[in-house]
Image (cartoon, rainbow, N blue to C red; front, top):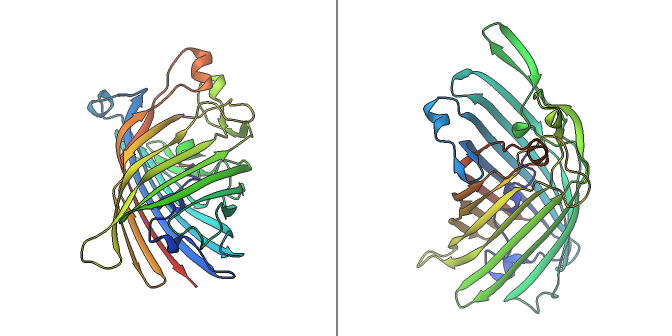
Length: 322
């Protein structure tokens, strides 16, 4: 359920300092794309390499598109409305022809943000804070018809490829930049608070503690630097670190039901190209640490489930000021 997608991939202040501000009454439209292929299974930080040898790895192919519109009340305050589109498939290596699919509009969000320092007084450094809401616009409990040896079977798809989680969430984010010489240092953090415990969708799992899907919090952190590419106007190179995941326990509310908590830490190189009112971006986070932590049901049942992680993520972005 990747609610936090490519709209947070670029971070704050990745272009020139003035690129971070929109003029009063102006609009910015943006589109993003995120692709990941998850198949390496981990229990804690230990990769379950025998899964590949046994031909039992589960493969998730996830494609997430984000479309957003931002309106500037003035240079300091703006509002963003985001609509994700989700396309995913899931199969086991042993039965690659038995594929489950999920697609559709994901959970939409609406976020208001403000710069702490009034621009343009602070063109070399600033911090933005945001607060918003995530709406359960995606149908919880998406189903797929899978062709099996005994005939077609329609069932609820796995939680990992559900377009939405069925809960109303609160989004809090922070973005900051500071110009140091020719480099722009940046950081981005976003946390999705999901106070709802479970969404009522049955998982089909045998353990009673995991019979219903959990509605989990999510988070993303990113920090790094952007430097202009020599002799190519408008092109910049970015390098940083990226961490994202799902906690075992939510900040608010209960944390029962089935979830696969854990996190991934990645080295995150990328490029940004700007020309006029248009900005294109690309980044390729490559995982250096993956950890499937224990869920609340795992702790109650004295076990430790696994989860599949991606080796890398492809993220593309485009924005235009109107």
